[in-house]
Image (cartoon, rainbow, N blue to C red; front, top):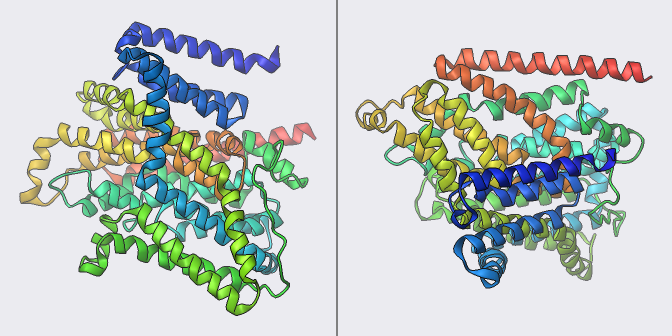
Length: 543
């Protein structure tokens, strides 16, 4: 009975949610109602309960198709049209999505090339002599993640491929590696003025200098700042709690994965003994440089735009595809000139790289299609209505916006879509204050706090959600079972989310960034030291 208790509870919760949906509106009027959130709730709940992500996402998609077909009175043909045509086919035909898939496959190929050339092994051996501890391995991963702030996808995959040999040697579990990667992806990008995320945010508010507004939100982005502080604390103190503690214990005993299978097939056997550290470092540098060049190229840098404006206007998908493909060509020539790989070895790596990325491609395709289902059911309209109905409570508005953004990003798996929905609502609420910006040049503090709350909540929901692109990329970069990553990361993310919520309640009353940050950081460290005390005491009792 105990074994099936979680499934029974989940079933009862879904039934209760469906009853709530029916009370709010009949299923025939599902579009723009509470029904729009049913597909992601079913998918996410099933994934966490069954630990099987593919079937869970597919059932969520089918649920969305059924609700949409009933609501639109289109029958089975409408359901199949929504799922197959508007869902899978449309997402795989979308140029942005295809660009991301190309980037994935190319990066997988580059990783295989570096492994075959012996670069990864050589780097692992070098790191073993310079990085002496588990804390050092975790902090090295953290600092590399901070350095690669240009784009979250690029961050996840690059940091994972570089740091896996190091963290494996120091017995850091793949779940812990995935958490550190994820915690330095979106949380870093959302406070980096030169990033694809800054570009997305800067274009959401009309009549205001977007980059100036983005920079103004950084000190109030509590979730991002507190998450970074938490990663450093956990790395230095070796404090773990929740399911992560079990994964770390297993890693100490030699099991880095804590799962039925490795999910990703890793072939780390080099083709040569000539591999050197430069065979990993140089390809990564080439990849970083060309991807940055690719992004600013798509933003018009070489047509006269400034570097900042080029980033603000870039097409991240096209730029990353362009840069990574250019990098792949140069890297192949480099290995051929070094004579560490043959031409046939390089060509074989393309198919192997694609094979390594199949799990990520499948999960991404399912996640994109599930988002399409929530879009067809107008989840954004439903959430917008909720936010507009509570805007009268101005002092609590930052906390409300944070909570709503968190829930929306968690359910839909998109932070960009979340702040794209909520920020225009915020600017609408404060439209009279924003009208005076053209003369004073100063953005009202409450506007900055509310937009920061939207961004922080969106990143938090994105960080927690199993169907988030960034979460999927972090699993891929760490080559970790996706559900393991989500279940181990969730307690950490929710701890920071709870403290951030308190911080935004305070921010609504006290418009002083130093007070808000001071109280929030104090609460974080008090909470972490308390958790550490109880975890250590429990460990001593168990001994």
